[in-house]
Length: 347
Image (cartoon, rainbow, N blue to C red; front, side, top):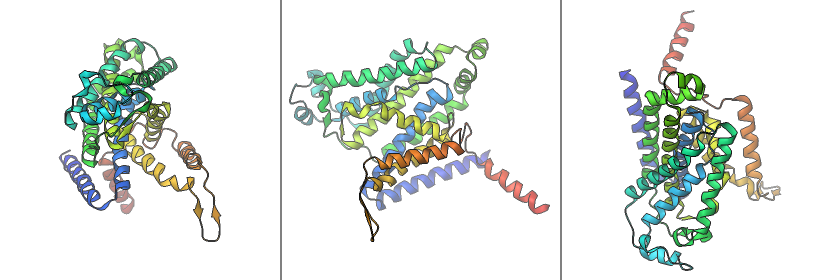
C-alpha cells in the first residue's frame, strides 16, 4: 500500500514535469489541445459521476457549462470590454463594473452552476431513464434560448468577445488533477458506495436505508459544479462564447467520452478524454485538400467526422463496455503480470 502511494506521487511528478516541458517546447496549437484534453477530463468525470456511478441518465451538461462559461466571462472581463460588447443594449448596472481575478471567478461559476443543478434536480430527479434524459435535455435548451434573449446580461446572440485568456495548462490541468482526486476520494467513500448502490438497484438501496433523493441531488449538484468549472475554463481558453456553442452536440461529445472510457470508470474517462480530443484534431487534415504528389484529392467537409465515427464504431464493437468497463487502473496490475511471468518461467 505504501509503495502504491510512492508510485502515485511519482506519476504526478512525471505529469507535472511533462506539462512544464510542454509549456516550453509545444507551440500554441499543441498547448490548446493539451488544455482541451484537461477540460474534457473535468467534463467527462462530472458526467460520469451522474450517469456512470449514480445511474442517472442526464443530458443537461451543455446548460451547466453555459452557466459556468458566461458567469466566469462576465466576472473576469474589464468594464471597458463589457462596454464594447454591449453596444446594442447596455449591460445591467450591477454587472457593469464587476471585475475579479480568475480563481474566485471560476469557483463562483461552479457554485452558480451547482445551484442551478439543485434547482433543476429537485423536480426532475423524480423521473427515471428516458424521461429524465428528455427533461435535462430540455433544461439545456431552455438555458440556451434564455441566454440568447437576455441581451442586457449575456449580450444575446452576439455572445461575448475579448474574454481574458486566463486558461493555461497550469489552470486546466490543475483543476483536472483536483477533479480526479476529488472523484477518487468521493467514490471510495460512503457517498460513492451509496451512488453505486442506487445505480445497481434503487429499491434494494432504499431498503438498506439510503436516502435516494438526497444522494441523487448530491450527485447531480456535484456534477453540475464541475461542469460549470469546465465551462468557465473553456470560455476563458477560447476568448469568445455565444449561446450556439452550447447545443446538444457538446453534451453528445462528453457522453461519447464517458461511454468510450467506460461508464463508472475514472481511469477510462481520463484516457478517452485525451484520446478523443487528440484524435479529433489529428483527423482535421481529412477536411482539407490532400496532395499525394502524383494526385491531389479535394477535401470533403465533414469527412473527418465520418472517419471518426467509423473508428468509434469499431472500438465499441471490440470494447462494448468501453476501454475500462467499470474498472480502475491500479499498480497491482503490473504486480499480477510480473507474478504470472514468474510462474511461467518456473514451469
